[in-house]
Length: 191
Image (cartoon, rainbow, N blue to C red; front, top):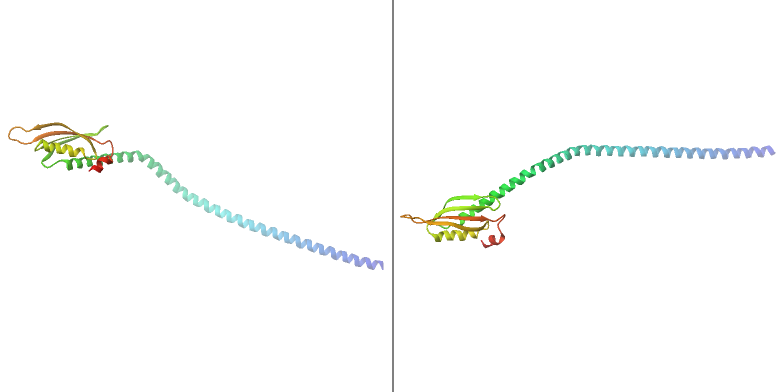
């Protein structure tokens, strides 16, 4: 009888061991499956990241051409900047003299004519007008009117000469100095 009890105990122990083995085997298969799933998931994510990196590299390469062109254009603009500045100064000077000539033409009273005009550009831009008028009073009006113009700083009379003989009239010469840059607001507002 003793043997019968040992057989039942051995069977119970064998079943217990088989159950433990089955649990361990299932656990190992589960852990292996989880590891395989994790590895597959990580590999997929790595491939997605590599794909994104490749896309970004392609976009960077495409943008690099644009960046290179922009840098070349900026270098060219920098090289052209002195020329543009020179052209702007020339244009401003031209516009300034155009405005001065307009002011002179507006300032001359009727029956007063310009026979010559000379300009001296430089540190102190100035001009000289020679002309004829019917009287010295008209020459004085011209001087007064020129003195109120925004681009003209001061006007002085060089000479007047009365025509002799049968001819009537006055020959005159006026010298004017220009404002250093743009007209002052005071003179522009007086107008």
